[in-house]
Each structure stands twice: as structure tokens, then as C-alpha cells.
Length: 148
Figure 1 (cartoon, rainbow, N blue to C red):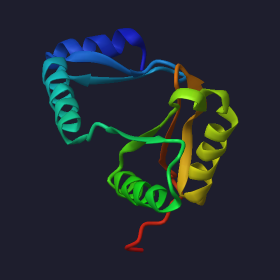
Figure 2 (tube, rainbow, N blue to C red):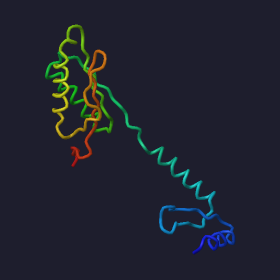
Figure 3 (cartoon, rainbow, N blue to C red):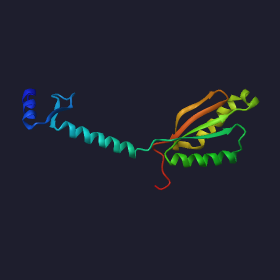
């Protein structure tokens, strides 16, 4: 249908001619009531926004001299956060002369990341800033849930 014919049909129906797919050859248009269409589209967007859960960022802080048991307790807490759909930011704090041993901090960060295996994805690699090493992890998309 030509552009002029489409506009004439829209005027005759007392509706609007709306371009749906401008990149198609030929472009795709619909004859609709623009006000009603826009209202429904806005209403649906607000509904989707209400149901969408904002992803939280939980934080776990620890020192370098943490025992294996304490590290496991924090790992269990982290697993609960990840199962709930949150991202987890680990902060490894350096105190006093520990700053001279950054390699120990990075080794601890690698140990923490490896303890979760393939169940996580590292969003932000461990990086040293100020007196701490920080990194962010999230649940991997291919991680299995305990229910399945």
C-alpha cells in the first residue's frame, strides 16, 4: 500500500498511522489509536518496573589473618546472598605492616574465588585501592540450584 493510501485509510478511520518497523523493506505501519496504544505501553512498563527486583550489592569484609573456619562461615553467608540473587562485594582490609604483603591479600582473594568453583562469575577482578583489596562476584548463570 502506498503512503498516501495508508494516510487516507487512517484519516477515514479517524485513527493514527504509526510506524512499527522503520528498518524493514518496505517499512511496516499500523493504523491504531495512538493515545490508547501509548497509555497501554506506559502502563505495562510501570507494571514491569514494579515486579523487577533491583539487584542488591551485599558486602563481606575481612582481614588477612582470617582462619579457615571463619573463612568458611563467611563463604556460607555469601552463598545465601548469591542464592537470593544479590551480588557480593568482598573487601580484604590491610592493617599496619600487612600493607607490605599485598601478594598475601591477592592469594587470599584467589582462594576465596576458587572456593566457589564454577558457581560464580567475577564481575570485578581483585584490585588494590587504598588499604584494601576489593572484588565483586555474582551467581553464575549456569549455576545449579539445590532444589534441582
